[in-house]
Image 1: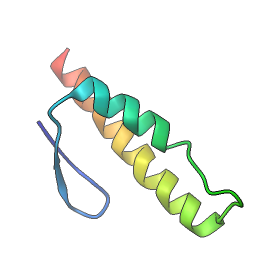
Image 2: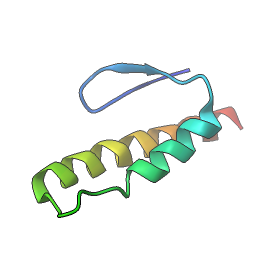
Image 3: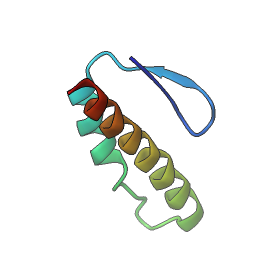
Image 4: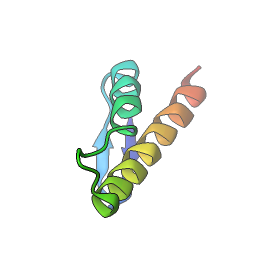
Length: 61
């Protein structure tokens, strides 16, 4: 299974459950002290990955 990230790179997904868990964790991460620009980019990236993984899971089920 493959998904494409926001940078246009293809990512091979070999363990969908683990990938969803990891993306769910990272989409809520932020720096301490906060770095608004870096944090918003990182959260947008991981939210996109998470949503694509959930969509992929829906196609498989």
